[in-house]
Length: 313
Image (cartoon, rainbow, N blue to C red):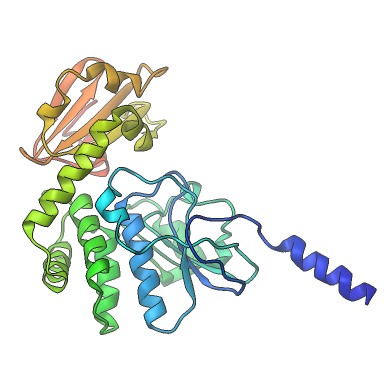
């Protein structure tokens, strides 16, 4: 009996006690859908929830978890959809599916690489790292949104996503492709978007309402919105900090330059990419003023422009 008690205590000690956001606890090993540790944007949010629902529909044990703060792209309309992250204590034997992130430094330290059974991202740069660790279970491709890949998994499994899942995935694709205006937008993205809108009975007006709601959320707390989506860099071609927000109309930032600067307080080498969907332009704010990039570009697309000599900070 003494040996049994010692072993039981040892197993309990090995269990990770970290709690993660959501609704329903479980005491058995599962597939855990998760994303980066810095913040959860709509692509990560929608992809984790949609993939979880697909796995559940296939009779598999799956939960979606994260402790990271939500970005403004997860608007009130999105949060009203009756799907949410799970409250779950990570245990021995759990396996992880990591979505919308591939930089190892952006993955929670509680997740060991040997327990990652799948990874999907659309940012290049870490293909070799994951190929050496999980082989073809890593999907890192040039595509507008991870949500597109998740929808394709539904299609391959011959399972029709629910209307709520359609809303999540449409919002993710629209946000990540800048309403299909971003350079990185592919035919796969537009095909997935059109199919999901048809299945979900969604209209262009639904998309416009979602985008304007996101803008309102950003403008209501501009400093925080910028901080949530600001990244630091140690590259002589880039500013030390580069933020990014997406709004509908750039004119709605008139008179708010002090708030923008406040978000980078303590840093004298910063820039912010303001993606304005109304005119399809990226407005690059920095301490020296404002410059334009046409068409509007995501941060990762601006990196490519810098790398190829088409833009200089």
